Image 1 (cartoon, rainbow, N blue to C red):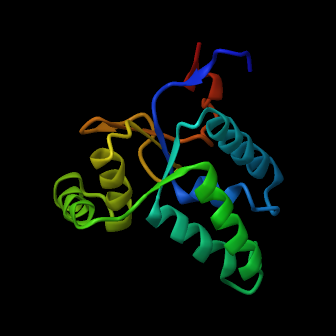
Image 2: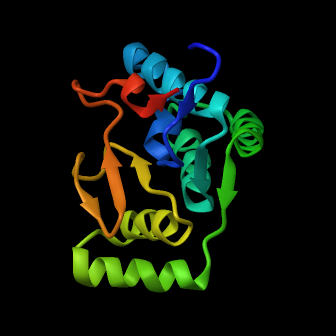
Length: 157
């Protein structure tokens, strides 16, 4: 990327993007997730919810063939929290998530991610778990694994 380019606005990164960056079982997806994280991280516009960071640790360390050992996941969780600003889950976010369940019919955990973005004024969520291209109360959902996703569409000079 050329000097003077920036990511357009803040982007909340869902745990699935983080997890795929460490999933050696799907190398093309792993490489793509890593590239997305690297690009957003280089511009300083990426954000995480504490929920997403917790889900990353939990999902990469469980099961009979975990993606990461517990010490590796602990190290990567710390690393991710130094690259991306992490927003806490607050009572206001919980209350807003409940509203998201009632009014937008999200699952609770998806509603909490949406609420974290909305209440922290983060206009975009990168995730494969939402209806890509939709916008709910100012939060736009983008699936970075969609065939029509182009990272350059999220970069401007």
